[in-house]
Image (cartoon, rainbow, N blue to C red; front, side, top):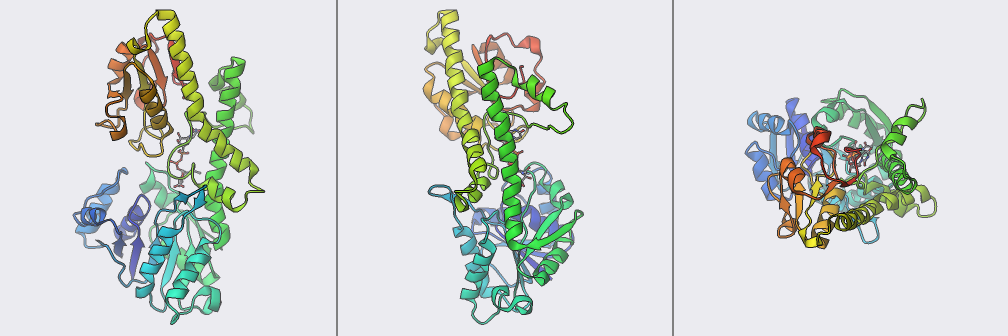
Length: 417
Ligand code: SAJ
């Protein structure tokens, strides 16, 4: 049995490696030649704890091989990006390209699984593209259980930073276009899965993935909205949430500088764009979370104004230090990061020096070069007049309260509450 994984990114590569670690013959496919060459050397092109070891073993053991064009296999898993285009419309161009590249090598009896986060109906759409390209084969939409090709939607739900654990342990939603497709997809995942396979249809499985991330987005928006209200009322939002969470049925998440990453800030839009009339709460939550960086920026401007009034300094003489650039604590991923967005706004606007503290990176991101400087925690605490806490990294939570002498602080994570 040969398993092919199309798209060797944050989801596809760990998945390919997980099958290969169970001694399955795995062909990984990616259009990125750098990724393909790196993997074939037994190395990885992305950052994820423990992934390097598993990939190295898989490649050295001869179980995993990367190529740029699909080859014949028995099961195909498609894990390509589904970004949005225009006014937050889902863009299925990568799924379409993957489907069209797989179509020529499909044979009777093959299984095709879509894993990419997708709007409702995307799996049926993928099946239509495959059927169009291969009129000589039958697909579930025409032949049901009797089809030559089985098709399912099985979303990933792993947490970046804990992928190698969650990939194996989380339950898996299996949305086959037919019960036979579901059964075959379940069998496949059971090769490495310790969690359960829970079977449904493809549209429910698609909606389930979007629902999970929208649930989290709406709940974070609730916390972020509370932080705005509490600032108006002179209430410490962190204390408030801790108190409210003492109630047995209340569990409020934590406010922050906004919502980042590649999923939670994107997936709810898939629901909104398909259901603009109904998805009012989900839409508003997106706007609340996306609006948070500008609100933080206003607080930074106010803190600087207070600092100037108190010290008599000119803005050009004042140093502002930002703590954290990553999209969440204890990772080095700066993409789609609200902290990065805020740091960038500060660095471009502030006439004095902007210091950036990010213990998880060695180099200043390109777009900040010339606008700001990397500093250590100690340097920033010693030199800066205004402190802006953006990410609650372990290192920042460990800062002793008495080493923070500054009066002018904007703390989006409640570290210095
Ligand atoms: N955040 C807050 N307050 C909180 C929790 C998170 O502001 O209380 C922020 C984070 O700082 C970050 C953003 O939300 O900027 C998202 O972080 P996250 O840890 O909630 O989620 P991701 O994006 O790393 O991973 C999510 C997960 N989904 C859920 O927990 C429902 C993961 O399981 C999914 O697999 C992943 O999206 C995905 O790929 O869809």
